Length: 108
Image 1: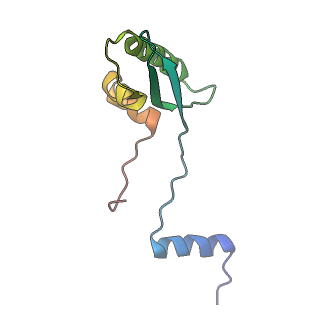
Image 2: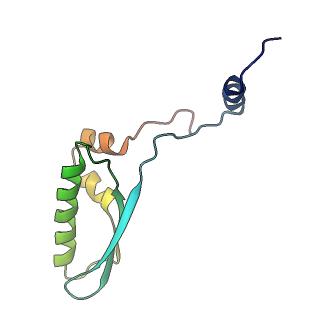
């Protein structure tokens, strides 16, 4: 019988059990601030990027623009999703690159 390594057994187990694991995890931050009226506002889904990432400047700029628009609103919501804002504000290829939206196969 073939002597399998632990790694080979692990791969075979995962293939047989159809276990899918995501290895490219993107971290998110959230931040709270008070608007012009004094209400607490929370912004969620802010991506944390590595220092050398080419999108880091764009994200900082977009976040500042987004927060400025929220700050000026007359009746702001309590919680905003920065990710949803970026879906509307960015070109789709840039959004996909930023969030690594790979299509999952077999309904996973």
